[in-house]
View 1 (tube, rainbow, N blue to C red):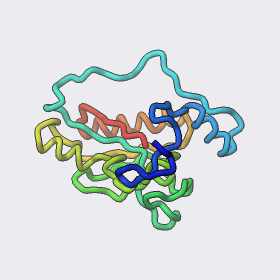
View 2 (spheres, one colour):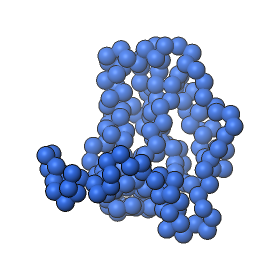
View 3 (cartoon, rainbow, N blue to C red):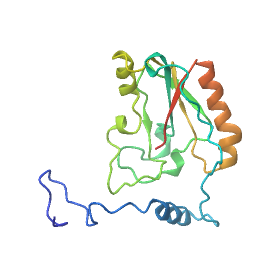
View 4 (tube, rainbow, N blue to C red):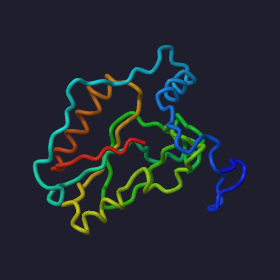
Length: 184
C-alpha cells in the first residue's frame, strides 16, 4: 500500500511495514531521556507476582476499575482529546469516584502515541460504561461502588509503599473480588 495514498477508510496508512513491531522499550527510554531524567528508565521487576486466582466465578464477582486517568482540572491547560502532553494535569494521590456515573477523566498527562490515536473516545481508555453493561448482562456479578485513580508519579517506591496499599484498602472496603487496572 502506498503510504501517501489514503486507504479505503480515508486514513493515510503508516509508512512502516504493517507487521513491524513497535519498539516500545526504546521509545520509553527515549521519552524519559527527553524529559531530562539522568538515569535510563528502570523497569519494575518482581520474582513473585502478587496476583491471585479468582475465588469465585466472574459472574459472581464484584469488579472495580483502577485507572491512571486524571480528573479534569479546568485550571491546568488543554486536557481534551488530542491535547499535547500536559504534565500540569497530573495527580499525586489516590482518588476514588462514583461508579454509577461517567466521570470527566482525561489522559493528557500520560505519554501515549498521539500520532496514531486521538483519545476522543473515553471508553477506549476508561471502560466503566462497558463494565456496567457487562454487569447488566450477567457477565460480571457487579460493579464496585467506586472506581479508583492510581497516580503516575514515576516513583516505584511511592507506588509500592503508598499508592498500592491505599488502592488495596479502598478495594477491600468496597468488597472487591477483581480489580481491573486500566493503565493509560
